Image (cartoon, rainbow over all chains, first blue to last red):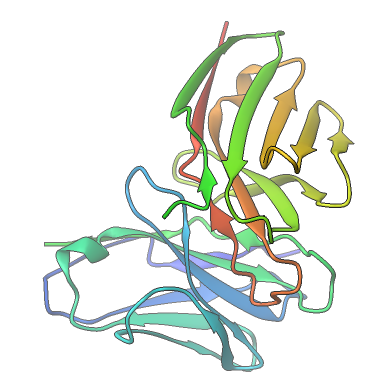
Amino acid sequence: ETGVTQSPTHLIKTRGQQVTLRCSSQSGHNTVSWYQQALGQGPQFIFQYYREEENGRGNFPPRFSGLQFPNYSSELNVNALELDDSALYLCASSLVGALNSPLHFGNGTRLTVT
Amino acid sequence: DQQVKQNSPSLSVQEGRISILNCDYTNSMFDYFLWYKKYPAEGPTFLISISSIKDKNEDGRFTVFLNKSAKHLSLHIVPSQPGDSAVYFCAASLALNRDDKIIFGKGTRLHILP
């Protein structure tokens, strides 16, 4: 069973730039969720993708967008980066239809915006 | 507005003793609660969960207790082992919300002392 993998592991960007983070979901899972974990905070829900469409969104501005591909992998795109976007970005996969299927997280991408 | 609160940023417990991690929530609509464990440089790992129709769930050394009237849950680890040293996140969700929007607390760092 292949777990959730994320790339890259670390990234440094400049304010105003755009970034794309990638995630491969665990085999057998059909949904992908993205979370942002700022320093000293718990993970915060950004959005979820199911059947290649956004299926729920947290309190994040439209410059945070995503994609899900037919193989259930996913991308998180952030435009016009701000200093406060510096955080650990976590991808998690799960199986829709499995009641209370817990999320399986990847190890995250550490984004630093300077 | 923190809907899930972990008021102890850190906790130190002697190896072999019981570790008790506490969590409070404000939203009475939450009906599913989870605990995740996180090691440095890794993503959160699901530990144990409890539905709001129960008041206790046990899995090996880990037991979660839910007090709905007090909007409080706790995780008991007994006996505590060195490998239990990690950050523990309490989380809650609405089972009817199938968008995997889980609300996390800020976490409690558990140190198991030799």
